[in-house]
Length: 386
Image (cartoon, rainbow, N blue to C red; front, side, top):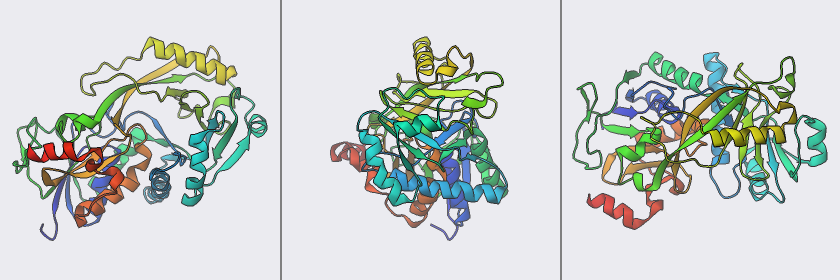
């Protein structure tokens, strides 16, 4: 590469936007592309809010990554004089021994993320508006909380442009990206773009762009999110009085208290049906809504019969093992694939972007947990032969 390489980043979401910004700051010439714009309603980085937390269970790299990301979120808030992070705390509700929560404790401690291990008696004392039935104990992360999603994704692109990057709203046209023979990207507008390196951070579209390298290990699922109206004049279910919460007492439910005037957010983390992020109709399931209402009345009795004020359909881009993909394409060393957020990627954006920029510019290899080779030598061999 030249002394100032040209790198094209496809996708302006949490992964692509931050990667483009860090590549630019490291001295590269960077062109950032997105089909519908940062934070758009089809993107996995769209919507209003995302949780940022440190608990991730045992044997994983994400708690340390979240700790680094949290530092970078705060740093950029100070630099840009914008607020994206709201440290209202995150509360984990464990049923029984709680293998996930118990396994998280040493990782939280090692990463320096403050936490408290709380008995049910203390949970009831602090948050009497929550019904702690079937909860055995909990973890409270007092300095974790939630992030503004769409707003911050757009702010990253704005700063990227302000610092000298080139941003274009354009879609990569259909072509065989896995052949290793193409020299430039064909764009929907009829133009082409030629670069020294290409980073594809296209979220749920990665499986279609790279069906052999990624598609067989990757699925996009429909995830319904509900916002319920809090009682008039009653602040008990708003931020400041209840934290972000994650409930493992049965299956994984989570939510964010009333904030930004958008209501009390509630979602089921259970993976939904396969979903096309381009053409899928974003209408919530009536069955999921019925279950959300039942759960809300059970765990937050004061919210029983709360009106539904808003719904969202987003998607998780799941890898088969729920780990990220950060790797070169097996058939083209100039192409990097970054994605597989699997429903938990947004918070890591600045830390992952920082990491990817170093890997791309120094031509290094990512952690084994993120590499495509983890899916097996046989499939990797097939990809190389294609």
